[in-house]
Length: 95
Image 1 (cartoon, rainbow, N blue to C red):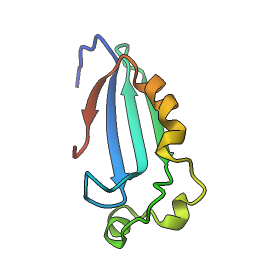
Image 2 (image 1 turned 135 degrees about the horizontal axis):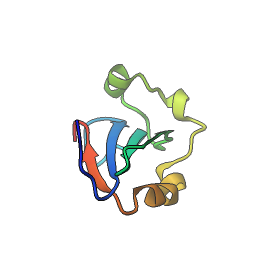
Image 3 (image 1 turned 30 degrees about the vertical axis):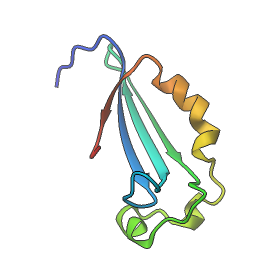
Image 4 (image 1 turned 30 degrees about the horizontal axis):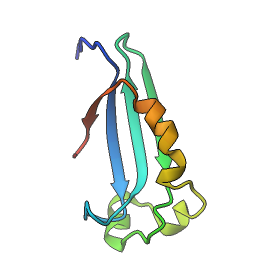
């Protein structure tokens, strides 16, 4: 695919504690940042949601409460994400 980008494009993929957009939280956030020159930056964050991960969600993504127990929270990485996303257009997977 030949994209003509003026700004970086960020693709996001999320894994969550469940399916409710109002109460569930992110347990894994993966980003692919595609720059106008074609270079790529990939980052994946495993996050402690501070609430239990539902068994159904674990069946889908394989991430357990034990896997995220010592991980940073979303608030802990928010400034880093702000810097990563600055000036980008956004795309998503299953969003």
